[in-house]
Image (tube, rainbow, N blue to C red; front, side):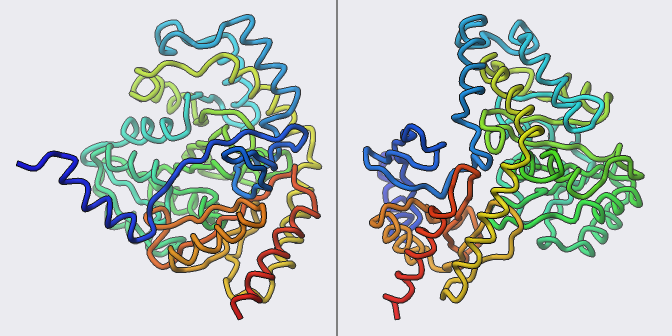
Length: 397
């Protein structure tokens, strides 16, 4: 009888042959670089792969807050929030997140993935309907599957398909439209006003994952809801606002903001909240500082916009199209997985780290370089990247 390893080995070999193998790199920030220069396996690289969009992860104020909280509370939370892990720092963070996002109440999870994985099965189940965009993040897909609800996947950004799915599911006990507010691999925005209007018309909830909008969009960085000007519009009580805090906020964890009833329900029923150790108090303390910096330092978002325009201008005329995106995520579509890996390797040989993103993370035939910008980048950093890509394109003829 073959061993489990022997059964897996041919499939693993095939995975590698398709150019789909992932490997981890050991990284360390280069001091004074704001996190955009990393020692990668001991060799310095200029990185365009982090989700630290505002350059806050290494901010001295966040580091000082985390250090002070560690000295006061210790290194870990020691228990689930439902036992004795709900620290004073976490309680204060939840209040401040609710105020920042303009919702009655907020619930903080130790990870954004865990927030979606726990919330969706708590909100809906058998006899219910989830309408899910085909390009939603894996954590939304997994949460939907775990819920036991009927899941209708609709073509990306197809409002007519969303409406048809809601109409066809009118007999469902509860209906939930689930969507990334900013799509992580394409950088495009979901049409939240139109989706909210559909949910209002069909008596459904709208659940948004704003992982890549928080801190970046909105006049004070409150995210996609503020970007679209949805505060106070009819049906806003139907919107459940989830966002991660390990990207533009520079920390870790996820938040779900919504009505008093929804948040209390999630607190009582979300298994990834109830049965997991809470995040360390130091993380919560750092995030409280990050919220203030996001609101008080709009120049970070201004710098991001400046960098984005410089990048897009510098990449005109390349054989690889740049996807339309108004965000810090700028995907360069290569197509073939092996070709994307080769282009990434060629950039790394020039001291630039831009990882290739391949299926199953993105659809077949759409492998890409996912260029991400940080407010800690300078215009000269962007020029170095665009110059390298232009040179590589010229060398290919």
